[in-house]
Image (cartoon, rainbow, N blue to C red; front, side):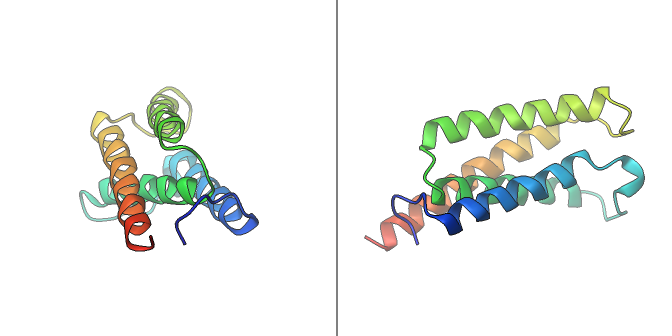
Length: 116
């Protein structure tokens, strides 16, 4: 699986991950299901880990992908806190996003080492 990437399947997987993230991050508060405390942090972590892994699989270079995903994390929290979505901005959610990016990049690097 790891390699140069850029084929159709990796790009579709990344596109799907982006679409899922848009729904999860920008659905109005009324559409967010109730869950035990802390569940949202796990969702943020896994969501951004998925974006990082599929982004690397799709062939995006590590640094531009990382910078783009961190910017996306910041912007998503600002949008949640400043629009009529009735969601709140959270520094901790943003940190979970960044941790997810790092986790995804580490997972991709580990997969790449195993397949060489």
